[in-house]
Figure 1 (cartoon, rainbow, N blue to C red):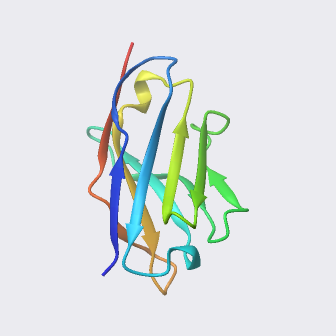
Figure 2: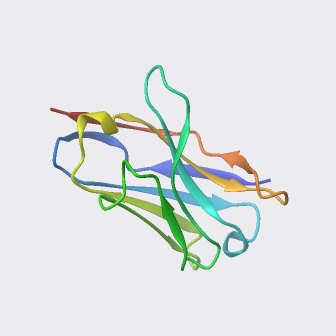
Length: 118
């Protein structure tokens, strides 16, 4: 059973930084891509960053490119999202997720709230 547990959210001022962590268990972590999604109030959950199994290929949505960095430590079964130059519009619940055998994001963490104050 795949389990994902996020941590690191909270309240931060605009322009500040925060690092989210997601600890995974239940299967071979290093074999699967990981992603970070976010859901702002009144909006759909959306993919913002993802990283391949080995950690050498990443993707970012345009709104976070250059400000957020996704990384993973396969020895620790953990994926990270380093967020910098935060803006109030980054306020959302952040979720980590991983794919199933059909390359679909199918396993989700419980989410962690990030609130950016102006």
